[in-house]
Image (cartoon, rainbow over all chains, first blue to last red; front, side, top):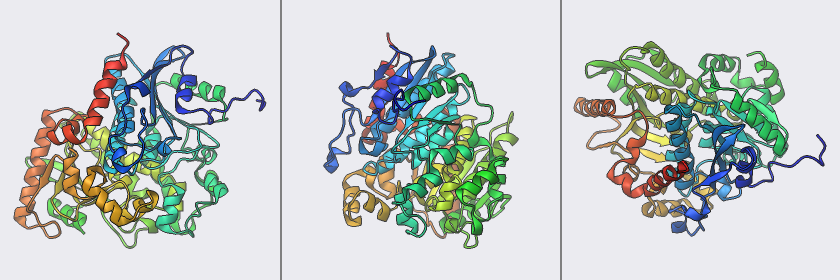
Length: 277
Length: 266
């Protein structure tokens, strides 16, 4: 694909991302900015709240199938999960589950762009993330559960677990997926453990390409609106996943058994070591 | 360490599975067996960043295995209760952990507990120490009911104080002050209870050296929680239904109410 015809998905804001993934003319936003559901906790700490709390929920269709997209806006508070932003995602997933149980499947698509819990809402952020996990696990029995990590924020903290619970995880080369962000590891374990300013090393370690090559993501796509949308459509057609990655205990325990903590392979060697497992 | 002490007390130390850092046993709870699981420190654990009670790579996947074993064994029978004894300092922070998928290991544990709950197993978390961040998400937060011993040693938070202070560009003192005013920012168990997330705060129990009477009290509370779960649903809506949640989580409730209104076009 030439650079001229490519349209960057990463450069789009959350609302546009959601719109692009849904069939033309079917996008309908729920709890939009005019509903003015803002964080009750940020103003108490002198931080200006935003009228959608940084999450866009949109219903619509993907290739004609009913879908709900939850798109996190990485440009607002680092895409962090507060009580309202996280509850919007949890509630959307819970309603999709209710419909699935009534025989009206709704396919959930989560666009991750998040550092994890919003520390200003700490324990409530963590609580709503556990509610998101719960709904994702239940939904998986009915429909494919689709996640997209495009970049450039990436997906970290408790929301990295949510991404891992998706049955179809789509990433770009610009994506990063990790539990603890590089800055946190540098702080907790020291700069010898990780240098948070070494971007090349970080992407080699937890970037989209490495995650895909080691079987921790299902599809690697170009940063292109049409390419991402096509991959999401394909994921919708995949149907219910018979063997979700996060339930595959035997396989991953044997993968770990191959690792000697005193001589951990570099990212390239890990690709080879795990390629057949 | 409280986790190990309470595991020993509630199971008579009858370890039947797990590993040196994930203790797992089936022990009596009322008239039936329940599976008790705890994550504990081991100074010789093979991954150095998971030696102080952290949930690391092996711990996440072994938690998942211990829970899933119950799911498989009880298929088509009465679903055994699961009791997660929670004293977890954090997830393991490290370069290798990230590369090898600590996020997936913790997700696998959360997945297993959630799957057990959705399958009808009463899942109870008993907080007897730290319940921190991703480690709590992996081990405990998927429970139908969360119980805690009332003690200053029980701490619940999204990130350790020092790290949270750095990330939010505040001092630890400022952070502690904020916690007094803003309940979700606090670390203590009473503030956590004020969010409606706690089913029962068990008072008057010695957390580090429980007496036989203390152990009986806690066992009784676990039993009550199991009965309560079996009367109700399998989802987590219970957390939003109490009086405390009505106040502290008004926004969570309002989001759900209004999203449901807008979900279908009339």
